[in-house]
Image: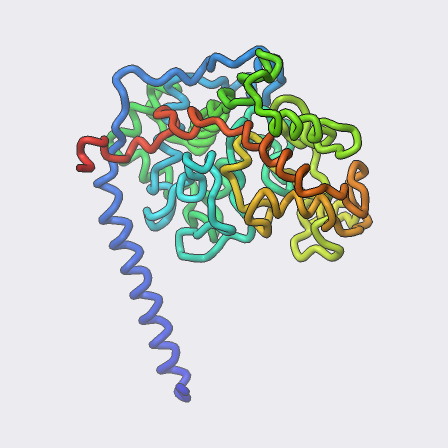
Length: 370
């Protein structure tokens, strides 16, 4: 036990200075080594060849920030660049991995200082189809552009400031030319950073799953179990499709799905302070859901079977329970759970999780890894 308060103060100060020195060393060591490897002709981001059943769905793309090939290219570099964190050790991609449909396989992500985030990182596929005012689990943000800048400034996630990020990117040789191609001038601004990354995320469209192929063929490509699972999913008795709507399988509005009687995390209610919003959350699309576990805002369910068991018999009777959910659950047999899970696997898009235009531009080419 340290009885001398001055000695304690000196020890705390020394520890703080040591930590700052380590952070500065990590910052200085990593930044110069990261240069993106980009194709001479940018990837095609602007007009993905969407099938008719997705092409007709309204998007949240604003008129002042359409997806362009050069804009999304810049967004891709920014998404994977660890310079956006105060210590140069964390990027957006540190919590959103392509092989997991841009979600995190861990229950909670690790921020720049080793502290865990309070919620599970949701998948980013088909973000262009979200309601224009419904971003984050608690729907606290109105646009993707506004969302982009928040993790950068989060004291848990990336810990930086917009002033620091702008200064560092402006001083990085490859960035001014990328900004010039994207926006017509080399200036680096928070608004441009947000717009570029929003373009990249809106370009992340998943449309080549077995389900997408099945729509054009009357689902003749489905197994009997997958087709039965789809029928159950869309049936009026189970009501899955009443919340996960359209061919994007996106829940339009935040809802309470009976996870708890008393919520430690109040979701939308934490933002509004309204008791009627307690336990309401806005999940991502079900596209690639077999890859995006663990599930729910707090990652409490490890598997899809765990999720289906919750809806079968684990729903809690909360006062804000969604109107489509029966308080005692839907009582799924094991056969029905297996069928619904098989159907959910048809929403997996292998091309999406391997598409090079969404990959890490800072990664070494394959031939250099050997």
